[in-house]
Image (cartoon, rainbow, N blue to C red; front, side, top):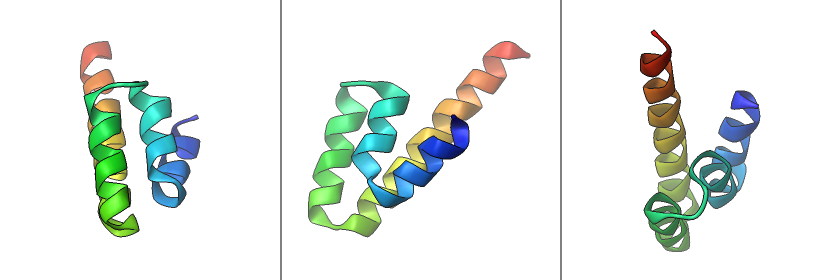
Length: 61
């Protein structure tokens, strides 16, 4: 599932963020960035997904 989120974060950034965070502030920021350009939206999506995964890893330790 983690790999799918990253792939969708690169190809369709809002979908990857939605699968990670659901509907919220991060999704709306990503939609705005994606409207400004695909590259800013993809960068934000990969960054947001990696930060979410990092926070999950910290909780399990």
